[in-house]
Image (cartoon, rainbow, N blue to C red; front, side, top):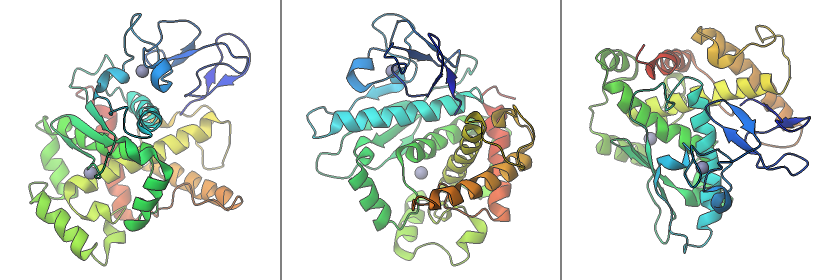
Length: 321
Ligand SMILES: [Zn+2]
Ligand SMILES: [Zn+2]
């Protein structure tokens, strides 16, 4: 994510800022990718702290407009969890917008989000025909860490959920093209394999013993659809780590040059190489605070090939190139 200029004074603004350091209200214009000091603000600004501008007074911003179902506000914690979930969604959408997805220049279908607060039973996240269902309850750190440990996952965040579930929607968008499916099946296998049976097998037997040579995560080994979604999520993680590193003014001998824009990089292998080396470095920085690794994954050769495949399609796909 970039760091933004303050439109009413000195200093910088972060992507989720609602005001400047002096307290002047500001809003993020996702089309201009810049902060502005004036309305129209998104009508969810007071409700969940959305800081995007709206097309007109009394309207939703581009991101909130994609949420067709908001959580039941009577469920404990629902509003705070929803606010955090929408913040993760705005982040993921803005990243994807760097490759033109879901912006005005993208002629294709937008995702529709159903945001559910869990009342008594867990809500399965997923994507069906353009509708992405998200459990906002997972924004609660205790809930999320409990599930993460039960599933023996090394990483579980709302941004990660957003990237993974939107990835299924991106697959659906790309599958409408003639040239995508054969290439996808060559790389990831045949997604027509019985999904329900594959998931059941995964949860009963666990991943294959050699999963780490073939997949980014154990869950990716469950089915080609999950392999795709995990790989897309990781490409978005790695590209955004790199973009944030550059935006923060940090340097590394692995960076191509000053002002390099990871989202504009056409060479997939170069991007993945730089991202992997920066992530390893920041893992080391995190250990200095006793924190878990920023990116607790190892990229096998197979994973790099899949990431490069995904990178090519995400860069070109929104514009039909
Ligand atoms: Zn909004
Ligand atoms: Zn999935």
